[in-house]
Image (tube, rainbow, N blue to C red):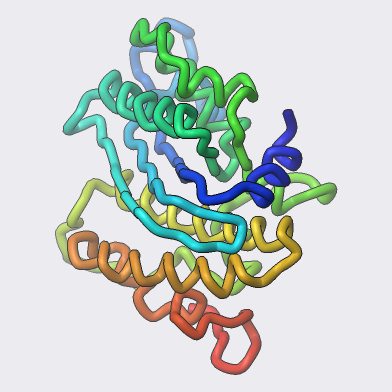
Amino acid sequence: MTSAKNADRVTSATRRRCCVLDIEVAPDPHARVLAGRRGSVPMSSPLNQIVNASAMTFYSDALGRLDGFDLTSFHRDEYGEADVVDNVEAILDHVRGDDGFLVTYNGIAHDLPVLRARQLRWWQCSGRGIAEFAEGQGEHIDLMIEMAGAGGRWAALSDACASVGFSLRGPVPIGETPHLPYETEKCELDVVGTSVLMLYVLAAKARSVEPLSRGLPALGRRLRTLAAARPHLERFALSPLLQDDARAWGSEGGVAT
């Protein structure tokens, strides 16, 4: 089942659970020694290990009504990589069991293959959540494919977000102690950007602006609440695209931030 067909099914569905997922990886020094690799390897290589995984879950319908938000992150310093993978497995298994759908940016080529490889590394062979999404059995929208269409591959999530007037970049704090590990903050920012792009794709599939006019403000309200405990999300508090009067970038009052 292709991503486009999955997206079509999502837009025709009623209120369903959605999971927006992102991972961060770093070299696995032991695997690289065993492989005799000293140079760089692709980000999706099984010679990398998972440092952090972040998931935003919520309920969504084809008109962009969003509710029930939950943003969760797992960093290997706190959980250990095997536990990080096991927690992602539990989330995706629940999403599959709830007839939900998964949203990623480049998840087909990166997130899901790496998660599956690291499951096998830790002998986590019985799980169905990651495996079934990786095998195409679960509904999965890979936004890199959706945004690029027939034009090919979009190289960066930040570029895709900028194309609709949303910036993942914000003021860089100097001399401040990070509230969370760098990999966690980056993952959560990428999850936010992916969630924004998802609403644009749902709007395109529904042939309606309602997923944008309803969904973007709902996401913004939740992010402003989350920012109280996650200062790295504060940069989105004043984003015009996430306000109650959200409008297209370039229209009156609709500027990028």
